[in-house]
Image 1 (cartoon, rainbow, N blue to C red):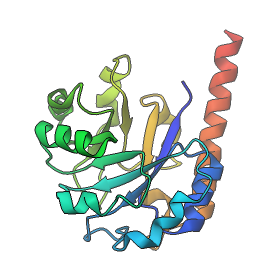
Image 2 (image 1 turned 90 degrees about the vertical axis):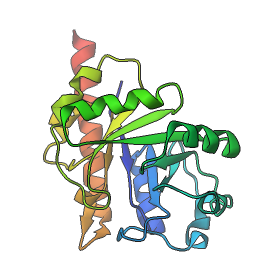
Image 3 (image 1 turned 60 degrees about the horizontal axis):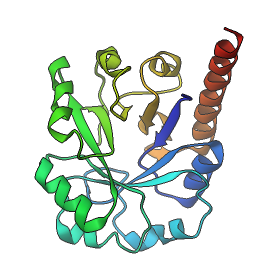
Length: 216
């Protein structure tokens, strides 16, 4: 399976299009967390998402403990996923999924190795897990190798937490989907050159892996 990428915290249209054209599988938007410098306070500013050619890219609304009012505000945008990044219970997630008829990504925050098992309470409810560090808008490191135990599992998951072009090859040996944001920024704004370079590196890794396996 080739490595897939979610680019999160996108704000402006140019960076979204750069991400999609570069081959990103998911684009994420911070929509109810004002503490983040990536927060989009006005949903009307991203209405263009309904009109652009998203190709195979999925659009993700990133939310922290969203209220029903928060969720109703998102109706004008055709999102593919809600990513729940707070302390949402399994029951609350079921409610959101049924009421809004949408796929769910649930973030599992990792501080110690045993935290990985917190995903079990949401199993068979969510569509995709995101294993990330504690830190919300401030990405922090954790030991990505702890996730190796899930590499052969049948759960669908992605990995985040201080991922950049410098450690991409190492991370690609652990996860099949990665979530990246801060390493693609300059002065807290997404840099299109960084986005392009990162996605080109992913393509190179995927090409080399395909060539390696086809020769075996």
